[in-house]
Image (cartoon, rainbow over all chains, first blue to last red; front, side, top):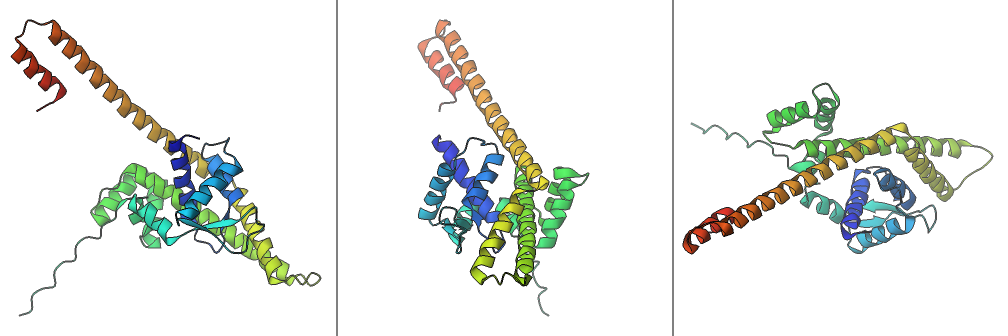
Length: 90
Length: 178
């Protein structure tokens, strides 16, 4: 994946998480399906997991409690993540 | 005599982040405009009239995507809550809280993936991305055309009979140099 594509994917993931105002987190598999539907049909679970890890390292996203399984954790956006989007007018 | 209270400045809305912070009623009104016969242009007019602010059409489309995804996930959450309620009432199972939570999360995800509106939403997103790519390509093309025209002019200048000083002045004009 090119750095530009990776950057777009990170923004997409953050925007999906930002749209979620429910009590549920969004699982990696759900985020993968959303991202694929945006026009990335060959996107892999590992690529999504890697970017979610990156977003977590940056404090922009965090795992939600009570995952269905350790392999399929649910994610939420953090306050820092919302600020990150807002600073970019997103 | 008391001075009249100063008129408060108009509320400002900055980009998508500003639209997301609006009251729900205002957000619904924008969506009604975007989805109605007036379309995004009508919504833009409404935002301009109400907030005295220019919002790009691209921002309105992004807002529509965000709003629809939010509603979509809320619908999935309502479905999951119903599933939880039903499971909790089953007399034969006596499910504990953790199991119920897992089942609810699974129901949420299944519902979030299984709807037609989600596909429509993604299609909208793809169209928006295509429009964005098209604009970027248009800008790139315009830039390339400008550079080619400048190069042609410079080449013609090299063949001209102008003095070196005149040539230098013309070159600066062509490339917009001070």
